[in-house]
Image 1: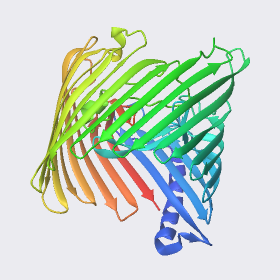
Image 2 (image 1 turned 180 degrees about the vertical axis):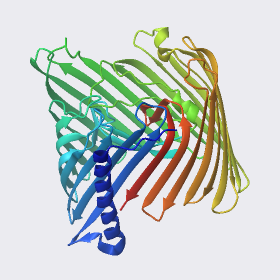
Image 3 (image 1 turned 30 degrees about the horizontal axis):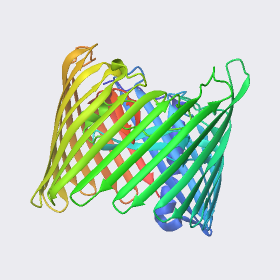
Image 4 (image 1 turned 180 degrees about the horizontal axis):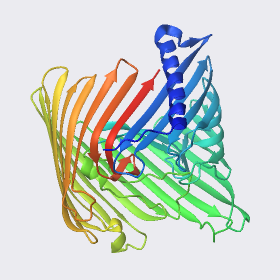
Length: 491
């Protein structure tokens, strides 16, 4: 594996950031977290990798969040550094800054923020900083913040949210056109919630002609002990339907949770409802098993009808059986756009020291060419004592793809943990896909928790490319081969 020396300028910037973080850590650990009458807080996320599987051997990504809190006031900044430079990420500058006042029923914030109206059909500004990848909490960079101002008023029976600002453009670090709107939620009864949202975007078409897009929704939520019901209807109206067509969306969910039995059902229908500032619910199961989570369905909010049913049965305290069925079609029910998934998952506790889990899954996803996917996944977690445990994970997956043909994916993982300080794991993957660049991947991972504020992750080896999903949001992780160091510091 070849490791090239980074350019002096890049390492100099990283060195300066590291010195700043180190000084702040020393001050905080020595009891100087108090700055005058307020308090300093810090979060640093750093990823340094040396790859032999890409054209650029060295990659550096660093996010530093620094803030100060005094009574009802709070302010902060984020500084980012990325080398090599990436047009999808900010580079070497302050990327976020904000000031916030929060007291009792009122919160006012100016600058960068995250907010959601309803269930995200109309608006959702969010960030995903980390996600479990290969059973290790990894840093990622999915940031869809809005730069502007918002206000939240929370009374006994009334909640009001107002937002204004510029969201990030799709796949870019540049700001888009301004938007403004809000949400009103009223609770006439303890179990009943009624709400409505509205948003207007001012934009222009490719000929630089101004037009606007109005989005609105109505929601209702009912909570009765073990039963939860929710529904939201939304529509989009454009003054220029040639550039941005009108759309509509429906989302409904019902849940029952009992001691021995539970059931959930969800339905959604989206038509021309994808924007850069919303994030409609995606009825896609987020699995803890790597192979299942890597091959999953991606939402198309412009043309999709989805359903999902899931139930669990627990005959005793030691056994939990889960059944799942979900599917997606386009509005014309085209067979080539069809997705289906069915699985049964059994979790059992054998005494006080042994936990086993077996999952059998069948799915197909025609948009990516998968005619059939069969997956068998198992894991055994043995508790050696109150602190030490050994985990054994085995997965087998057979895929019939109309482009790649039939092939197998296999994965094995062995991990030792001493809670909460250290986890050592090894993972091996194999594929028979003749179109893959390689057929075997092997990696070793060391996860250290140093004190109460530091998490350090060393990864040596290789892992294949694939999707990683969190809460219905999926992103592509590239293939990796080399050495990777991740460091998170929180104060």
